[in-house]
Amino acid sequence: METIAYYNGKIGPLDEMMIPMNDRACYFADGVYDAMFTIDHIPLAIDDHLRRFYRSAKKIDIEIPMPFDELRAMVLDFCRRIDSPDAMAYVQVTRGVGMRAHAYSGAQSGPSLWVWVKPDVLDPMDREYSCITMDDTRYLHCDIKTINLLPAVIYTQRAEEAGCEETILHRNGRVTECAHSNVHILKDGALRTAPCDNLILPGITRAHRIAQCREMGIPVIEEAFTVEEMMEADEVFFTSASALCCRITKIDGKRVGGRDPQLLGRIMKAAWDEALSEVRALKA
Image 1: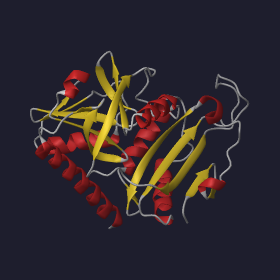
Image 2: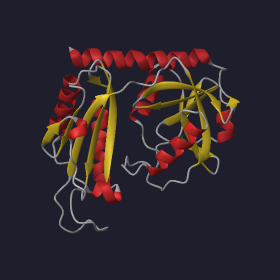
Image 3: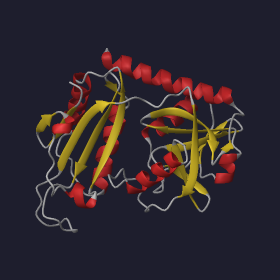
Image 4: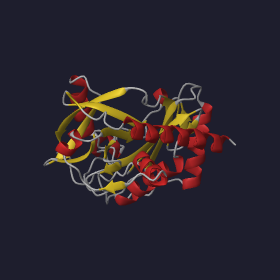
C-alpha cells in the first residue's frame, strides 16, 4: 500500500480517514505530535521520538490512550507495510472529541490518537542550504511539540518566498531555533548550540549530534549565541527528524561558514553512519 493511517481504532489509507469536526484539533490545535523518518522501512530514533511524544502529552494533561510498547509496535508495523522504504511516520494525540468549548474540564470522548505513514525522504546532506532570519514572536512554550504550528507555517512561507529552505529565529538577537529544525554553529573547533529551555524544542536529532560530538572529542557548548556570532561562525548547520545534518551556506543573502569543512564533514559522516547502524540493528 502507498499510505496507511490509524484514528481511534480505525485503519485505512491516509486519504480515506475521516476525523470528526468536533475533534479539538480542529478548533484549538489542542494536542501534540511527533514525527520520524525511515530508511529501508526503519524509523530512525523511534524510541526517542516516542518518549518525547509522551512527555509532550503529559505537559498539557493528555494521557495517550495506548501503551508505549503497543504504539511502538504499530509504528514499526506501518513502516514495514507501505511500499516506499523511505517514509515519514507521524503520531499525534488530541484531547478528544466534544462540543466546542475552550476549557477542557467538561465531558470529552477521551484523547484521540492519530498515526500515519506516507512516502517521504530525508533532506539531502550533499547540498548547501540557504536561510533567512526573522524575529521569534512565538509563545513561551516552544519545548512542547504542539500541533499549533501556525508560526512555523508563516516562517516557512517567508523562507520559500525568499527562495530559501529555512527561517532562523531570534529573540532580541539571541538565536533560538528554526521554523522546523534546530540550528547550530561550529567555532574554533567546538559545537555551539542553544540550551534546552522553553525557547526551543529539544530536538531528538540535536541530542544525537551532541552525543556524537562528545564521543568524537569535539567540545560542546550548550549556550545561547547571537545572530552576529552565527554570521561569523566557522560553519552553520541545522538538524531535525528530516535533516540529519545539513550545511547552511547563505543567510539573508550573505555567505556564511566554509571555514571548517573537515570538522563539519566528520559530523555529517557520523550522522549518516549512525542512521545506517540503527537500521541494521532493527533489521537484525
